[in-house]
Length: 279
Image (spheres, rainbow, N blue to C red):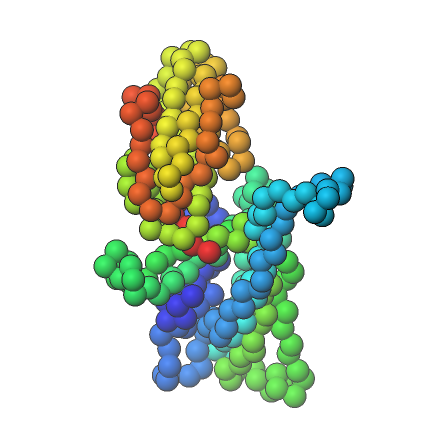
């Protein structure tokens, strides 16, 4: 996380609150108003899997391990030109961190924490740093402490206090804010599930999506229900206007870091789209 760049929490479909709005302020006219992120703590991510209840000769039967949720804690200094302005900014911050605000009910309160991650290896592709989204939900409202001795008599003076923000990322990956499609290169470090689409289909049309990455080829065959667009989110297995033909489908549905090749069996007009991700 680059503390010299904007750090934002999503408040609507295309709106964000910059909780690092004073990032470029070092010394200047006072009092000031806004927010500055002081620190970020990324918690450990536990590996989760399934253990067979039936003991084997060599111990338990264990299947694949998957990454669990990730906790993120931010310390944000809240500044106000006056004590009233400080409390207005606290209210703005608190409103942006409601667990289930209107507009995020379909994602159960999960929204984007957007920030830049500095890079040297990929500086040519990302000269200003990699702009990433971590999909998070507040674990609580902001925690802050205002004392009587420091706040009384501050009606016209500047006032500031730190606030602690606790977030939970159900998916611990950090996703690039833009998407990729077609034959390309996944520059991240984590495998991701793509979204499969075709804009125009005939009713009952069979559509094939096929791609190879990381030495693994995945094939998804879907049948359109009605004429029109179809869409498959291979992460949630949400299927819009289509049904997957499981007997003709193979692979693990993942796009791995490195070269991504769209196979020739992919139907005309079918698109494989993904967001590069980092751990």
